[in-house]
Image (cartoon, rainbow, N blue to C red; front, top):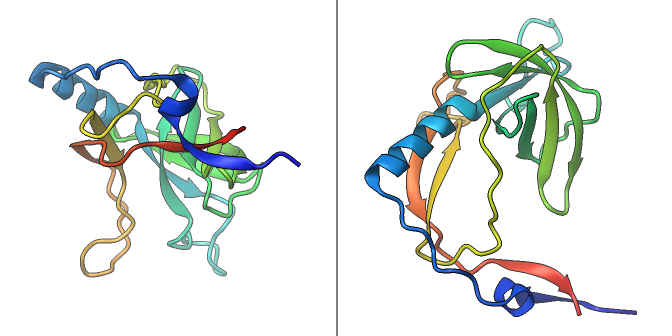
Length: 173
């Protein structure tokens, strides 16, 4: 049988192009897009026994990636296809959504907003050419504060950072 090996992306795709440097105004624009498109997902199906509050661990972040409301999120949740969600946007709106599925190998989940749009979205960019030192923006909703209390705020945390490690993928020989 063919063995899969862990190899650098460069070894498979060839050398990456030099990173595009972001000006302060470009970085500000990217942060504004992240603020509009990063959402908090809350389960509608996983309520407490009195059906009044959502269990704390059924809340997580996602990013809207299409105008018609597809959301990429983590795959390490126990969401099942068909689970209903409330999508909370930073502008104060709530929308209904449904989980479409997860891939635990790539740790990605897909959710679809069912409330009519259009929705703000972040375009998916090529990530296989990222190198250490390349700029990137990270966004999400923290689960708990420093005192261990579960948070429900509507404004995502957004920060600019840089890629820290070479990217590796599993590639067939």
